[in-house]
Amino acid sequence: MLRRNRTWVVLVLVVGMVVGAAVVEIAHAVADSQNKADRAAESQKMAERLAVEQNKADRALLAEMSKNDALSALFRQVAKTVKPVVVEVRVTQRIKVGPPTQLPDMEEFRRRFFGDDMPFEFRFETPRQVPREFFSRGLGSGVVVDARNGYVLTNNHVVANADEVEVVLADNRTFKAEWVRTDRLSDLAVVKIKPEGLIEAPLGDSDKVEVGDCVLAIGAPRALPQTVTAGIISAKGRRTTQSEMYQDFIQTDAAINQGNSGGPLVNMRGEVIGINNSIATHSGGNEGIGFAVPSNMARFIMTQLIEKGKVTRGYLGVRIQDVDEKLARSFNLPSTKGALVAGVADGSPAQKAGIKDADFIVSINGRDVENVNDLRNVVAEIPPGQEVKLGVYRSGKKQTLSVTMGAQPENMASAFEQAPGVARQSGKFGLKVASLTGELAEKYGIDKSLKGAVITEVKPGSDAAEQGLTEGMLITHVADKAVSTAAEFDEAVSKDAARSGVRLRVVDRKGAAVFVFITPEKQE
Image 1 (tube, rainbow, N blue to C red):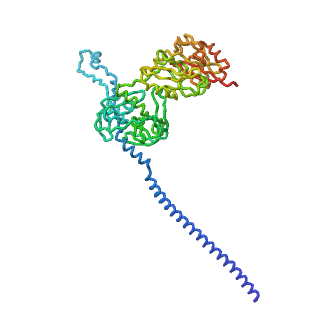
Image 2 (tube, rainbow, N blue to C red):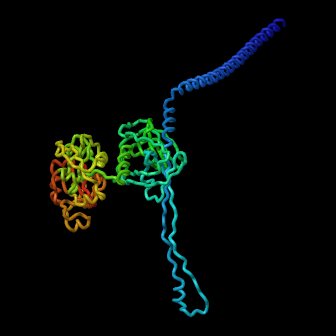
Image 3 (cartoon, rainbow, N blue to C red):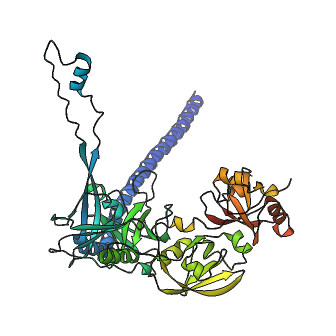
């Protein structure tokens, strides 16, 4: 019995020890878990305190750095200096609409059906048909560039066809325009107002601006006057698709919207280096691609409008085109920089100086010519009567020609009405051609005095199609050889020299000559 009791005692003691150990273990685990939670909470609080302290340190550092924020201070000062010279240009155009459909003369109507003897009195007075008139109003921007004389620069499209023009200054004074003079080809205009208490902004040298320079655009977008936006010069020498316009745009990402037209684009010296003109956009609003007329072009146009009331441009008398690498190789040119002569107007300064088709103009008075647009702008600003030196490549050799500039005729297109044609090819080149006959000349509107092979079909997807050749164009030359018939054309393009491609001179259906280089189709 005693033995049995001892066994139970031992068993109880063992169980107690095990249970006690488990309890202790659980207690330790609970305590450890609590400690971990406490440590995590403490770590979180520490992290929060550190974040607060770091933010305070960052703000202190930012406050210190802001003392050296020269850019913001510069922007503020430029805006403060230039805003007083920026104006709103408000225009009103009277639009008359013809009278509505005329009502019949009712008295005549009565006599026709009832005669003069009517059993009752009948009188109807036909109302007067007065033309209706309403007013179209618009808003743009401008900048005072001559305070002493009251001259304001703006865009032609802001004031074109306006019957009334008002200029509203930054201090809300309003002046009626004394006169408005415009130049459609540069889209610039000068508005003359009374020179009373005006402030002006100087025109800077737009040739000295560089891509990356900081600029401000100031104007009245969406009828919000004195709006300032900031950006940089994104590019220079831009041109849009308006072929007859003289364009050398400065591109900027400073926000420009409807109403900014005519306002200034200024550099960090407060000089006007451009007149805001237009934007490239799909949405209709600013997308970071804005264009401004460079100040040097604006100065040239403004001076002539003020002094003569119109703009006289220099005139060379050539039809020119850009060249790609294929054309450059075919002409044995050193590069694609320059302008290729595709036609010379009869009696023009170019013809008198001996300039010929296929001459490649690379410089003018020692200044390199980049492309067609560059040459057009340079020539336009040369006074008529001035002699210039043209650097040209002819048959792969460089030479210099002297030309006395003329005055640009009002109708430039008419100067080339009799200009000779251009050339291209067939068969493996994706073209079908026929000798020019009287019937084909009449069908396609081709000058019957010209000779060549007329294109009757262009294969879709061919390089000829890609280069813009179409039915009705007249091929006058293959490489440097004139062709008068389809047979001569076929012979010329069948030679080994044309195996990898051929240069053509063609005349389009408007009579304009152009050079193209086309490659043959791959043979399967």
